[in-house]
Length: 359
Image (cartoon, rainbow, N blue to C red; front, side, top):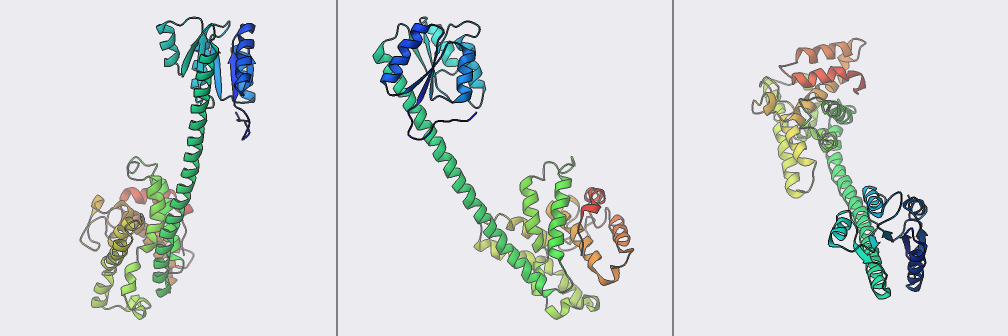
């Protein structure tokens, strides 16, 4: 239903009464007030008029054939498109029980027959004014909501851009990670979306979690900023001491992000980015690093990122860019089920493996 009232036009008052004399009396009163009367002799006629143009107030007779005013009011209040239209009952029956019943059904007032001009005028004007104020308030709230939503999106975009810039710094220093951050982010989101349908993870994974991990996972290797660039180019020749220091990138990455978070505490992506940076090398069996975390003590975001990171890293290594590389990668992940990786995540990984990206 569309409200066809134009700005500046007089409010429309719908009068519903099966007695023609009553319609004529009320119609004249409404015109004298400067409003536009619409008349209906039954609930069916009234419904047709409302469908054509929504009134600002309904004067509704209680006792009518086929459908009485109580039933029609109840139907109006059940319909989201008409429930906010104020209804004033008009009736010769003015007992307390009748009024209480009308108010319980959602009526805003009650006018007794025979009509008294001053009473009708005051009640109608009061409720039209209240309705118009309510509509203006709702419109203002919608505008405010639009402004707030727009500002929230802008703030979120700014938060993302800060983290994307940090992730780009990491990737620029590591020539071996071609599209790695993009792939990990995409695969983390895809994995999280699929895990959401698993009973094991339903309570942990929300739409917010999915949106956040797509951004936060890009920063899993930000600790590599602390590793000299020339060492990043020759990982395969690292001596034991260099390997030990390289492992510190997880802790160092978390510390970098914690410092960033201290200065931008409103960034909603950073808490997850910090836990991913710290624990994305923590193995399911506790033999990873740092801190010997194991099993479900490892944050879910880090468990998801670990398998996405390993998958793309294996597929990106030069020696694996052969026809059987994908099978070798899948074999490694399957063998790591329950040792390196969360078994439940591995199960879902293989169900959606064709949807995942790799270098």
